[in-house]
Image 1 (tube, rainbow, N blue to C red):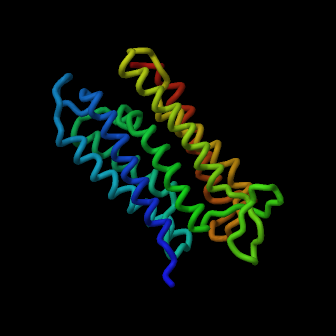
Image 2: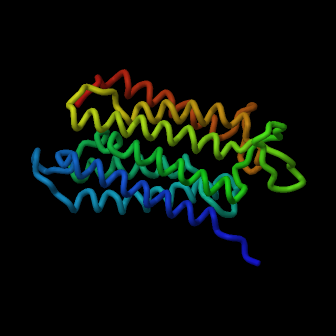
Length: 235
């Protein structure tokens, strides 16, 4: 009997959530994609969404192959692919790059939370041995393990809701708020760095006692700090 494709299903759902979330903020803040302030140009958000989906897919798949995975995706690869595409898109179409990332951050966090549910049901990205009541067992070789996928999913959902509120306050009430992109990078990098200590799958590289994801988290956190300090809270 063929196993149910939980991973693929939730990857598709995550992509759908990301598109809906970004489209919402792009629609209520048209100047981000306007050639002139206040002029709505619908082709730009459509092109951006399609391009982002392709760049995330290619980046996540490429980093997975670099790390030796035969299938699946690596989130940091997808994030890197998105950032590169967003920077090029902003340059070519003369839109505000960091503003795009601000609008996309709530959707990215919520979509990632959905995607991690697929990891949990599929059994990948599992945790280390756990004797707590909420431990889960995927196979006899690993025994009961931490459901780190759920830890991350819950935390990302909370982060996504915070960023969603942050962007709404910036756009609807005109309150000065910190960059959602900077907050997202800092919080997720710190979260991922901590959760890696409870990751038990052996498919990731490790150097000097830290996993590849932890090494990536360090400059990512520093980038978030730089953006937060360099850019004053804005509307």
